[in-house]
Length: 469
Image (cartoon, rainbow, N blue to C red):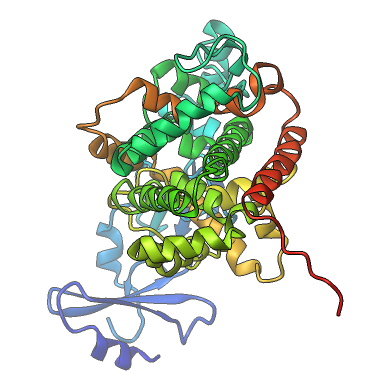
């Protein structure tokens, strides 16, 4: 693009255009309209000083205004002041970066003969460097303070958030067996009586507490090294939080599946319970903005042992037609698009974003079930991976917004102690595996329970035996 053409495109006050330079290949020219004139700036940068805090970049005459023949304007050059540009994006995807105010320092004195330069203040590239900079400490000062007073505390790898052996419950004794009949009966009663909206509120409150979106004390923030669990789960020392969330996801889905498969009444009674689960999933998705809880309920409905109950699904379509259509035409396709990176939730109203693909990707060694297989199927390509990594980077920066949304959604929430217990992971661990088995190896626990779910499913609708002709 020539100089004359660029001037025809920059017509109004404040308009600007960046184009490649014709006279200096490899460089660029900034054309802008100011004070009824077109000004042209040749951009050529040379790094002359690098340090931990900033990098100084010199442009001898290149960043000064040029009249139309490309000659530098000496008057403008001598009166220009130093400028600051925001830090450029990191060349590698870093899920823990976030924008910060520029360092408030006076620029060094300009030498008119050397022309104009720009100082680029770079953000700390890691969460620890960022924390140090927020304290106003860098380099020697930081090391001296650490040595003298030991004020700065490095974030540490946490222990698990769950301790089922020490959990005290109103719904179960101090010691209980797996799937104890009396406890299961009470759980079924509570789930059948609960309003879907109330259930979604309790699930969201419990989810957000485990994920460190709500009720994060200053002491916990210091231990995490960040202000929100949404950022912590993207960091190396957030491994335990990632595993806790995976544990909660699988345990919640399994408990709900047990409730569905344990309903040994008529197909119509079981269809009524399916209807309730679908309504809870819809509340979590649309009204609470809790994609994590929504995925757990959907997981229970989509388990092979549940989806194979043809008679129950037929009864659902007959007795609760709108609910069946909602599930098949809206909720299932939405869940699939979330997993495949083809759906992104609007920020307004989201309390817990869809982090499961990231958790499965980062913790594949401990991830179990169909969710982990997301990264093994042929349909998942690089675009899907990059979508979820990019989403994680955004999620890490928006912890405060999720907290604000959650507080707004739960503003008038009245917690019911027994109902809340149903959706606590410690309670679910004890219910499913008993007081002794709740602490066994995770993979072993779920492998055993998969067989239990299969047995319950086959009892409701025995497999059809195919005979050879």
